[in-house]
Image (cartoon, rainbow, N blue to C red; front, side, top):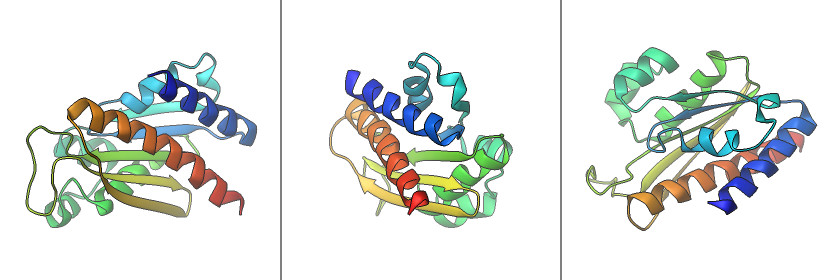
Length: 163
């Protein structure tokens, strides 16, 4: 867990240096990213809010993810991850957002989406990036790897924005 907190502190340093606020939209991590960033003293300077949208209905209600997108691609899809991140931006005053949606296990696998399948979204006004990965391990391991990758991906996303 200390590695996650160290990573969250690095994210906070970058966001604060750039004068940016973060919002999170989480499903499979159940607020784990938000918990990690709020472990950092002073995170209110760069963390605006977190949405935990575990159900499909909450994704539609709180993040304005079109139900048709969930029906077409499934909740665990890059298309939904993108919409979640974009919805977190539009539903907050944050400048950048990240999202996680996936199958942490032990159940929930469907054809083409085994346990450990996670889709990520990172968004900033006018620019969204998504990624799909499959992590090994049990539920806890999948969720921890997801939190780490979401934060690492945010750092990469912010670097791309500077390029």
